[in-house]
Length: 190
Image (cartoon, rainbow, N blue to C red; front, top):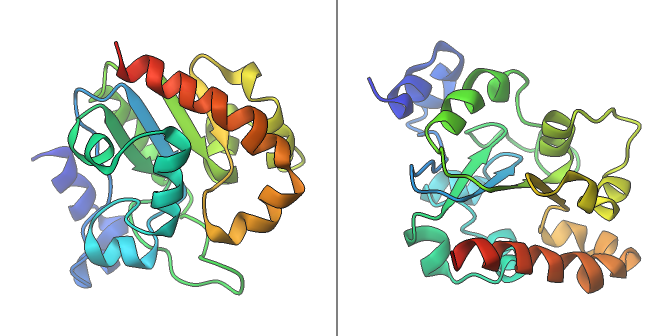
């Protein structure tokens, strides 16, 4: 049984399987850049295409990559903290389920031995991978992104819901994004 089938048939995912939903992720063996985010949006769950929404358009712009490179090069992997759309919350989507990353991420990372950079999008991925406490803010984490290089690069979620954060923190677009593009391009050109 493939890892994809294991995830899809996991007892913890039976409610999603009953809906006909498949786990959303991409772990090509040739991946050199890995993006770890929150969980698929409703649109992504429906289409089965990761980052196929306004957030994805902005993310590709931030990375300086085309849709072709993002989806077809085999150089970029995508693993969410949960493989399924979690549903709506009072503000935005619900949090990803606990335990999913612990159970599946090590196996998925094992299938991508060439990953050189892991881009951590949002608080859930950053807290998990950088061992941050709830007291450590996403703003401080992103502002200090250089502390986590060369392995990790924390960024804010590219959702339009974060436009206010982006306006309050102009240093992100002025200082962090050029460095993110530089890191990504250096890897892709190798």
